[in-house]
Image (cartoon, rainbow, N blue to C red):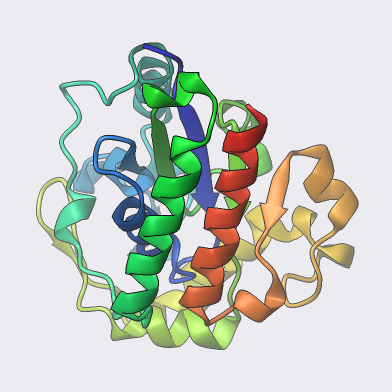
Length: 248
């Protein structure tokens, strides 16, 4: 089986990573695209680091990086996820994506069309999307370099805070986690800024992405006009995948 195309989708919490991943899965043939979630590689609940008397689920130390790397290498070699990996993240819900069903069907037909006209190797080649909040940080450079395509989503602090605080909580390896009051301000957003400011001009995550830096690490940054508009975001991501597939 040909080596799969490994696609990383990253960005701040509540930027739409999982929503976009699932929508891409909807518009591709079921046998062609699968999803892996970074959230499936958290350490056990008891191993999550505690900072200022609160567990920090949004830092690199909360992740089982050896297992993640092992899973990605297995996918690269075999084209599917290892048998030992059972997703907990698929039990977590996402909000309404707002993309009309008619648009999803139209995109599904478009994807089927350009897949048929792609190179013969794409008859068997698969796509694996990995979504996660820390895939492109400098501290995860060795993980970042495994991906063939890297898509970076963005959202404002206000939107991230509103969306995250609207969630009921998260299924974990051993139970259920609900953010305590102030968690976005104290943990989530500061961690995001620390790990991703290198991608932005002057380190300002509310400003513009630094095109030279993004190009140097092979990251495609979501256009500003797609922020908060999942239909535009889906068109952007599908278009990028179409370009990559037609070129390979």
